[in-house]
Length: 402
Image (tube, rainbow, N blue to C red; front, side, top):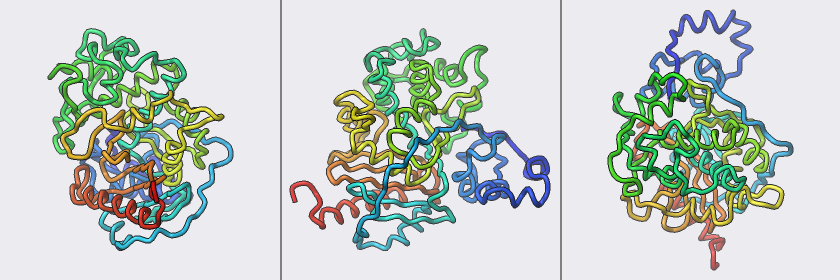
């Protein structure tokens, strides 16, 4: 995502009028002002800049505009459970992850809740690509509500400006599973990759900025024949939901998830340069509300006694729909899947929601990995932690069949 280039001295002079005003700001905003990035591209910010920004991206409108996701009425309960008996040193694990929050919810009870990096339960942490799984859930809601007639409909039926492009041959289902066959480069370390360039694209007059960029991409292979990770395509999913429902994504998310799930705090959703929520990125929420999202899904995403998604949606969305070249893994409808029936939402710097229906388990991770977007060591450590928590639950006799 792109942010306006600002010079720190000018920012302080214009944005903070005097010492009194400085100290009237919350600690997250002060931290961001003290380390405000001058680089346009978040992928190339320093670790200290990310530490400050990930908890405050929605605080300064000149840095990034956002739309509020309104909370409902009474928050859903997250009662404390018995401490989980783990063999590893959780503090050491969190230090290695550069973890801001780590929560384990099992059978609806909080069995582990720890914070780091000066963060706490009252704050909001940005989700990055965890938002993809929220956007996917809104597709299910839009199908249930009749705004999207079929996942086999062509994408261009809902985004007419894609007609005549490579996406004219792509179905909604193929967009959800990232099997469009359209050429895309998601290399976070390459300033010339599509994921870096599309934020700076100058749109054609009268065309949404994202759609303007995506409709000029060439076809690489036939649709449905290859999986290729593409944030641009999830952004298109968000645009599709917006155009199908006629509602901003933040409004639809509040209606379908934030209210029914009983979120405690309002969330925010970062907007693109053309004023639309970015479907593939950047919902800000509290750690406990990320846990509530996981519990909401475990409980069938019920609102008023009925699920917000069609019958069978979760089976299709959270099991392998396409192979990703990793043993025991796959990709569903914007969810990363495991062959044991668990699944996860993942963000590039260590954000995550891991869900294991068999063990009624939700693990929330908010982090800023030291190695950045592709920290293999941190990623492997987190996978090992997931396995350790599963084993701890099994050892208690809480696993199925025990």
